[in-house]
Image 1 (cartoon, rainbow, N blue to C red):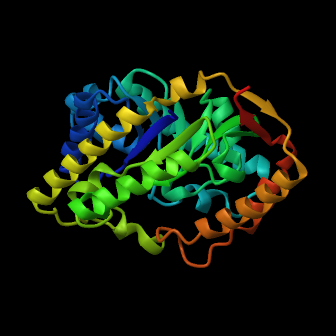
Image 2 (cartoon, rainbow, N blue to C red):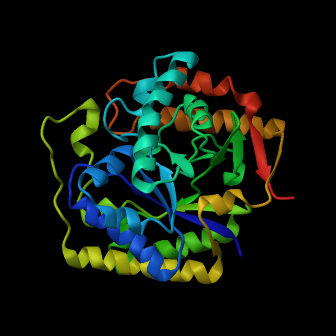
Amino acid sequence: MKTISLFMDVEDPINPMADDAALDFPVLFSEVGVTGCFCLTGEKCRKLAERNRCDVALAYSGHSLGLHTNAHSFHPSTMELLADVQWDEGCDAIYEVETRGFEAFVNLFERAPEFWGGGGNTWSPEVTDALKRLNIPAYVYALTQLPNHAVHKFNGVIALPQALSISESEWAHAELSERAQNRVLDAIKEIDQPWIGVFVGHPTRFRHADWWDVPYYGGRTPTLPEYTELLPVTTYEQSKLNLRTFLGRIMKEHHVVGIEEALALTWSYRQPSDEEIVYFQQITSANLRAAVNWPVHYPGMSAELIVNKTMALTDTLQVGFQP
């Protein structure tokens, strides 16, 4: 039996109908008896408060909650903000931005986030400095990477990798869903780690035909709200049913926990081997260079300074294990 955390990202602040999807999924997890790890943007928190969606905030009360950046796809993104600035300036800039997200999160939920997750799988090492200043102990979807999806510390912050995922398009079809569920459950058995992170989707993409942030692609900022079309209710309900089935299956085979419980496991940390350092440098650099291709980013952005700033902190790397 492995220890598993299941993640969903709650982002769309534009379309008020996305608030109903944001409500449905913590309710679904609670009904099955699973603690979900839900990552909410600061902007989503502000909009839920403005719309007086106390029902949504209450639905998340029994779950593990993280900050999914202050504003996700609003420009500048995390990488856009930090791609061309040196370390000290970048640390101050990201701390100022993420403090706004932190305050919106605390205002809505009356508790601090347990973790932080990058928007669009993007990141820069100055994030770790901001998280220490905000007393957030961990970041998820880590682009810093070690062999076999190992938990690690980087610049004094715990890094939790996303090992596996199931997409919304897979949830929407019975055959694809069953195949994806089997793929993930089989893969979990093969990963020799004490904790494994599994991503299961975005509430708004279960309900809508496209990503909420398409209007922000390529550095754009629309002047008026642009909504993506709703999927048929039958598709939405089928997707939720398939996810419910998966939650039941994974609960029978594994121990599903929130991040606070995952971090409370008996962790020890050691220095990386030479081989692990080489792996970290090669794969992390590749991850960061790939991250600039997130469609939201403005064209031509370079990750090279972010790569250099990250590699300069290689000596802070520690490998997590359970003795």
